[in-house]
Image 1 (tube, rainbow over the protein chains, first blue to last red):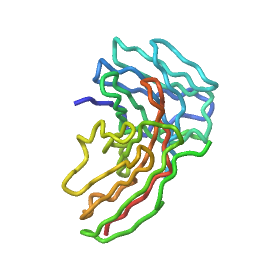
Image 2 (cartoon, chains in turn brown, yellow):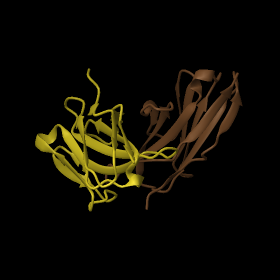
Image 3 (cartoon, one colour):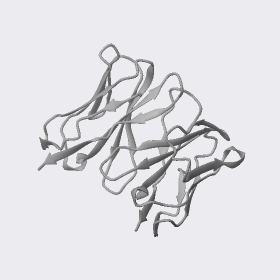
Image 4 (tube, helix red, strand yellow):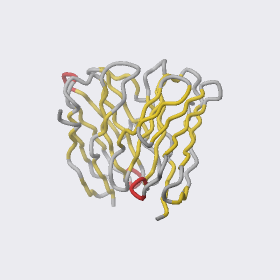
Length: 111
Length: 114
């Protein structure tokens, strides 16, 4: 059974600080990794995707991937109250093209 | 570019009744997904279509759920008879063909079974 694990939180971070969100996955054949943000009552929206080991930066967001450790993370710099949401980690298998989601981490940015 | 369209947005039914949800993916997207998201949990894949063929339906409760994608475009997800535990958001998503393509979600169809 392929799994994607996230700490459910809530994770509370002061405004302006760095928020660090983590995700582990069980399928070593996974090829693509995604972070989605979901506001209460809304559908998930894509923040970032990463395919290769290392870091990928986009504005205030940095995704980090370590395939050997089966670990992917999302860093949010200069956290804003509008970043308060649930962050979903998703992993696409290289074998069957399925995209599996974790349960999400609730992030609270404290003003 | 138009996004993934879903209807109805909200539905309240009594247990043992039936309900159907419709999805129109982004034009040209070969892969269509139906996810179920229960409050406080991540989306759970119910069924995945590639064009009009089923790629995976291993987590679809086939005794009560059915889905089809006619002509490789629109899709319908049906629940009959509904149970209380089916109360959830049903998210349709689509993706271009390719392992490095992300998926794009519709607004979701919110189902409450009473």
